[in-house]
Length: 304
Image 1 (cartoon, helix red, strand yellow):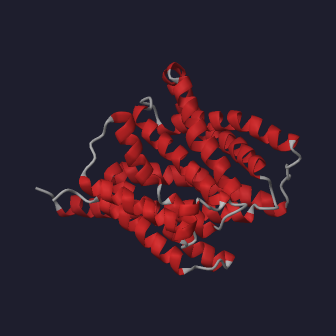
Image 2 (spheres, helix red, strand yellow):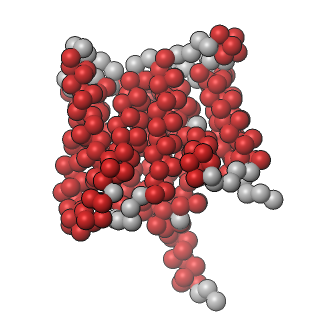
Image 3 (tube, one colour):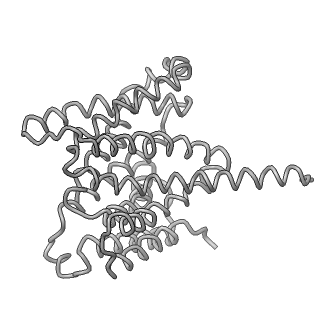
C-alpha cells in the first residue's frame, strides 16, 4: 500500500520532471531563433564547428571518469556511434543553420514537429515496428501540416513543386534526426554522458570538412560579438543543458511519458519567433501547426 510520504515523493518527482522537460523544449524551440540571429554574424558551418568544439571540451571535463570507464564498450561499437554523430548532430545542425538563411524561424519550428512522424516511419522500415491505423492517420495529418507550411498556404505550389529551399533543407534535417533517433535503439549500454561525449566528438570531426569547404568557397564568416553570443547560447542551452535535463526527465517519469513533451518544440519556436523576432504569424502557420500537433496526437493515442 502506498504511503502518503511515497505519494508526495512521486508527485514532487513528476513536477520536477515536467519543469525540466518544459524548459528543455523551450531551449530546443529557441534554437530556431538562434539560427536566424546567426545569419550574417557567423557562417553556418563555422557555427556547427565551434558549437561542437566547445561542447566536446565541456563534456569531457564534466564526464571524464564515465567516459574512461565506458571506453572499452564504446570502442567496440565506434563506427556505429560515429554514424550517430553524423546523422543526429552534424547533418541535422548543418542543414538546420543553412535553412535559417532562407526560411523563417516559425517555419523551422513547425517543420521540426514532423520528426516524430519520420521516427514512426523509420521504426517501421528499419525494425518492422508495428503500425496502427491511428498512427498512419497521424503521419498523414502531420505531413499535411508540413506541406501547408512549406507551400505558404498555396496548394498550387504543391502541384508545381515550388518550395522554399530553406524549408526543404529543414525537411532533410528532420529525416536525419529521425534516422538518428531510430538508430539509438541499438546504442551501446553505457552512461548517457559517455555516449553523448563520443557522439559529440564524431560531430566535431565530421564538421571539419564542412567548415573547410565553406572557407574554400569564400563563405566563411568568423563570429562577431553577436555571433559568439549565439554560439554560447547553442552550446549551453540546446546542446548541454537540454540534453542533461532530458536525461533527468526520462529517469524520473520514463521515456514514454517524456516523449510527449517534444510536441512543445514547434509551439515555443512559433511564440518566440513572433515575440522576439517580430515574424508574421499567418493563418497558414496556424493551420499547419494545428495539423502537425494534431497528427502527433493521433499517432500517440492508445488503441481503444
